[in-house]
View 1 (tube, rainbow, N blue to C red):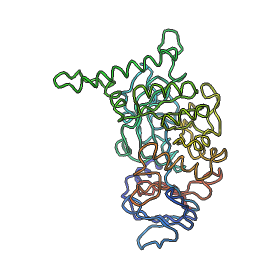
View 2 (cartoon, rainbow, N blue to C red):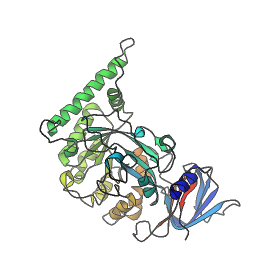
View 3 (cartoon, rainbow, N blue to C red):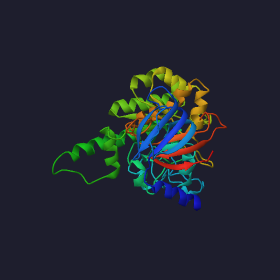
Length: 396
């Protein structure tokens, strides 16, 4: 209780004037700064540079390495809880196969302990919400890893609509639907066609149909207001996702994409970005042919991508993108390329790069401080600044 009270007190505190000095500061907006200083004022980055003089009245934090606050490009934390019991698992509602009307913000618990757990590794922003398991499970949101209410934490209360193709979207039990890939895609296309007709009728004055939350959400997908986040792994399912996306002119983000390396040319031609599965994801089921080198191959092909923690069925119910990026850095990505995948590249993919993802004047003051190489297992996150407030600190 004391730790929770302290967190809430820190989260509620007014942003201070802070100077963060690092032996190396990775701004992700230019070359690393040696003996770098980041000045924070009123919750925003004031300026950053090498050897900057620290004005009077600024509280100074020190670290070996400073990075932008890390971004988890896809998780279910806040809906999926650390206890691993039925009452704290709200990421999938299995009463129907298609439920785009379910809003993440209505299920998000900003005081969930997993959020604090991730923040302890420097993760300050998460793209979270309904996860894989049915054809369309609901919506996602983007939140900071601090805040007393969902509204206070949210950057975007409605970000994407989560869809699953392949085995995670199929129910093989007798009498359940969809039971095959063909049925799955037919059901998806049917709902999108209904949403097209709904959109047409809504534009006719005096003839508007009754409000339908499901079709409202899909209409926003058709308009490009909400991307369709498609969890998909096998190469032929990836091509199916691209085919449906092109048929309905959708904005699609490929999620997982274990066999992306087999269809790089088609993904590149589609223009769709990828939120890649965790680098150390278990090689099983649809992801049985995953490769540790997929991140580096996406990078070499010029396909925008970011890394994620995804969803885990065991305690502590989440991976940590810091470790996933470290593994990617040992399998083809450079240090800075791997760091980009959980900072500025993730921010750009999610459309939030004007606020977070790099250390630049005017952006949110979200910083992660480390006592060594962030990708070295023996290093520690010794401090986190979020929205200009120090929300965690380990005295060195």
